[in-house]
Image (cartoon, rainbow, N blue to C red):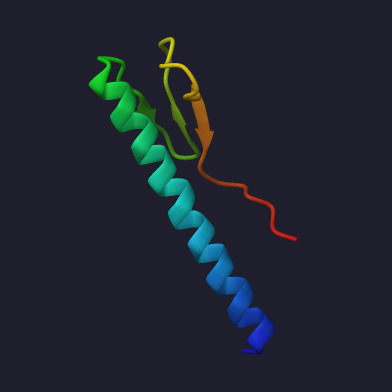
Length: 66
């Protein structure tokens, strides 16, 4: 594997972890407000009015890398 490919793989894995951590954080904050979300195969969804500055949906797959 080339150095560029290794770096790309590292960045890809890092972004996946960041997205996962962000989603868990959003779900935790919403649950603390009594507004639990739902984890699906490709996204996290909250059908309630979420706290200010928190999303209702986080996409977990399909990230495009340049």
